[in-house]
Length: 215
Image (cartoon, rainbow, N blue to C red; front, side):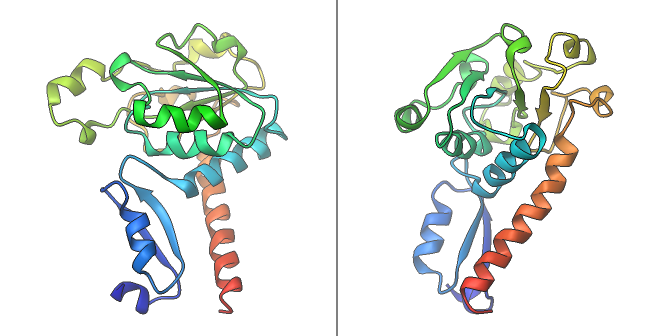
């Protein structure tokens, strides 16, 4: 509450689930959720949708593969919720230990039917968008459990031969070893452009909020 009194907009990123909802209840000023525990990252979802739209010129009708840490990846939950507004075909690819959480599947399925798999290459040739996430060591209480799933998936140059020529590869960053740096110059690699779009969309969000509050 005190921090909101010192500002025109409060931007909060916190490791605890539900932190943004609690802060919004007590804040005197508009609040932007910049990442709430393992649950939400709505501004990332906005820039992800914008990236897809800018690079593919549409969202409806696309086939989207989301791969990596689907259990703890907050960007995934916000993106899936946002994609529920479109007619898309979504495939979720992860190790069994990192499948999307059971407490979230019902709410997401109401908005967006999806398929689950552990095999990245099974439908690789069909994806218009491949959204890759890192496996987050900091989310594991037991390092041994992390080591079991570390490196489960890695996008390498040879995989581009199986992908559509106009497919795009996205990543919310930071990247570890799940995308080879050898792909950085490939035309399908859009994760750096995605980061740039993040600057634009977040600037637009701030402008919208400040305009509405009469700043």
